[in-house]
Length: 425
Picture 1 (cartoon, rainbow, N blue to C red):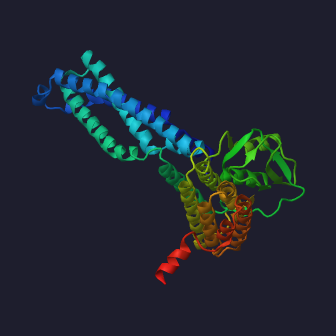
Picture 2 (tube, rainbow, N blue to C red):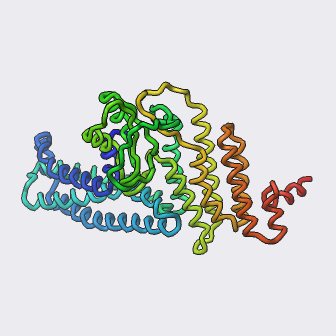
């Protein structure tokens, strides 16, 4: 996983305020740095640009960019609200952290700051005759950048905040997290099978979710101190002040200084992240499907879409993990738990099958999903699929009382499949 400073930089760079501040600073620098290049402007071009022309362009840009920035922010807020009401609040962080939207808002803000600063500098005769030429060229470049961003961003506005777009965003980040775990099932550590009874626990000093673990940093400490580290908590686990964060197998007593250094290498935050936590992505997808089946929305179609998305993710993960070459463990003193198929199934299907057990179309879709997943080569897939199929059938039997519904629940065919077969016979 990422080093602490790299993880901090990655999380900070996703904040809209940071990106907006950088583009605002770039706008100020672009505005005031024009005078540095006025020596390259030939004398015959100095009189071609009048002060009124540049002033008019900058005034129009300043007024229009202020409106555009306000519109862009209100659009993001509306998309955030829509995703919260129709999908799940946990998916809204993907809308807030969307790189294209943040870049668009930041560029609009930077153009606004650029025009305001340029107008102030013009009023003080900061540029001079040659500097106005550079200012005009810079303004044209800024306008071209704004036009390009507007054209590129308009297409995203069409589906921003929709349930379908939210599902696709969650699928994308979950796919990346699953791919990471397929390539590195234990992040270069030895797989955790058991913890020695004499291992010393290192308790957590915060309450929250594990967001990142600096594996390389832990390996360096383990090598320097000559001990082994056993980690029973995966990324995304909830820990508190009495939780065993790590276990240390050492011949000597663990010092407080070493314990403090070990804790500093594990980032604990108030909420889970999608980066290295595929179970969180599965949980969010399941939450979208559960909310779609609520009485307020009553949208089984979205739940069916979620089921198909989850099946696609699980099958892709199984194929990627099977095709990855077995590589030797890089960190011999570290032990890390593998991602279990049963955990992914529980996160994905337990709540979804409970909410969908009263919807026949969702029940049949889940049955088909479990049938497909049971055919995967891994035995864990078949065991988990059979277990969840049994739970689903029991719940559905409790929901439906008519014999015709019970026959459909236990039928291996989808609704309407018998009619299709008869029509082709």
